Image (tube, rainbow, N blue to C red; front, side):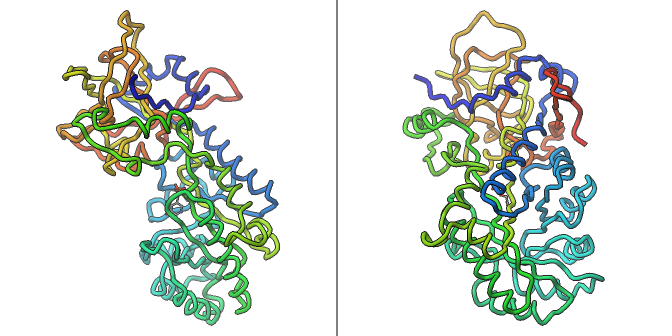
Length: 445
Ligand SMILES: *Cc1c(COP(=O)(O)O)cnc(C)c1O
């Protein structure tokens, strides 16, 4: 039996796929494109906020902008009064330009350039300070009002991290902030952990609550902590994921490439998105005592979070027209109008596994399963959108569309470049005004 790994069923996407709109767009735009569903972003944001409210925790959600470059999502943040996490002058400009207020920005990233720090300070953004020398640069900005800062904590559980201040550095930073007077407003602490585990986040958050109390004793404001991002997205059902991991092998990939489970993003997560936040708040720091939510409430500490991927769950997909179909021993090679640069996972020696849907241009007679890998329209042998020999329900034909599902988080545009002078796939924003069934579209920005 062929190895399959379809994404969770998505009725909204299915309706759009059945409407004929995607074929029309591929024709009108002359090639591949990404489509975005901002209504999904709104729903994800609302679900994170609900998780905070249910836990009785005061908090604020900042969208980590690096997960997608579209303006549409920033516009939704501006409307909803959500924050945005930016890490470059370009991201900062984009956020401000689409209506996000300076005070709703948090600026992360290591050793931020002077110009970025200055604009952030002038706009009243919150700056996550990553090192002692950065703190000194912040203190010497000489801006008319105090610079709002968080001190980023080095995560002891991830000793390989290059981010944050360790214990000794924090011990030096706190009195430095206290003696800097009105130049700085030390609002609290932050961290960002890689991976998706709950308990390490709860543990470190609990530690930051204690640090807030310590900082307050020095007269600092210290009334909020940011736990960063890293809320998993659940792309595929548990059963098919387990079956896939146990059954997959080199024969399933073009070129006989061998992958182990650890090479892949965990495409199934039993606890994902807002549920991961619920779990973090319900867990006990250090495994004992009161749950994190209660410690936050009692200490009067506000919880900031910076989800990227999880706010984009099911908020976009990537569409590529089939350009050619050829045969190899036992399988086929599709070439699409697009490149693997629009599917970033491929550039981390990994594979984007939720499988593409085939939308035939017209109903075919030949409905026999056809296994094929998917190549891009470039001259690189390694330019494969799927090395995996996907089991399509029929032999694809030029003009058919492949829809890679759920690509808005980090896949569609993180690595895109106009390689070969191929145009970047445009982003099409699809919505349903006033709850109408008929989808409406516009180009992003
Ligand atoms: C990348 C990043 C995020 C977002 O991470 P996700 O896994 O997309 O939720 C949040 N905060 C910081 C500081 C980051 O670097």
